[in-house]
Length: 216
Image 1 (cartoon, rainbow, N blue to C red):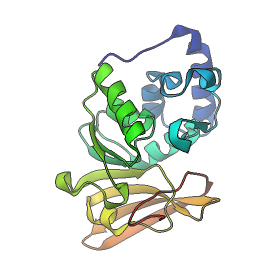
Image 2 (spheres, rainbow, N blue to C red; image 1 turned 90 degrees about the horizontal axis):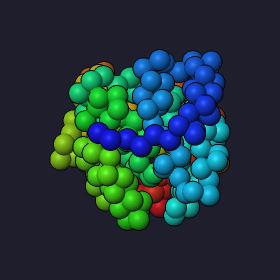
Image 3 (cartoon, helix red, strand yellow; image 1 turned 90 degrees about the vertical axis):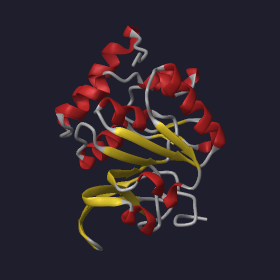
Image 4 (cartoon, rainbow, N blue to C red; image 1 turned 180 degrees about the vertical axis):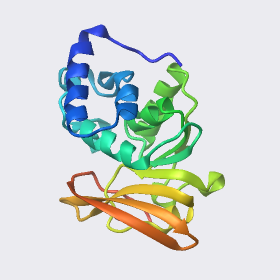
């Protein structure tokens, strides 16, 4: 693994990480984020804003999520070494790379060819063994199921049944659910065959999850 790291952004990154620590993000997730140059996942025109705690635009009318949101969702997923994690919505590749740094075996699905291609190129350049697929993320990736965790980086109108079916017992699904303006973050734990518990955190904002079991 050969991740890029520009020291000119180091002070800004550390300031952001301290901000996230004060908001309750775990040391494990913060240590992985410290290794990750967020500026490399966005356009050169936006790089001066890379360490603001805000979502930023990327190609194809999509976004790279707010750092706090990425960190919070990753904490909710509670990744352990060698966990098999499915990500729905590769986007810039930032979240998938963070999961890989935490020791997960990552599978990620993207529906937009341009984003899929660009993320693949980054993963190859950096020597990251991240499994990628171009397709409808609302259907998951059944070939490699079940998963220890599934993380959805776009807003769904309801929980896709395909994703629930692809969780292991005691696995977690982290997904924003709501309308197209705001969503609540659901952390759903599979406690048995067709049995689930859930925890809900309020008021997040994502681009829509498009697909057969998402928005049309």
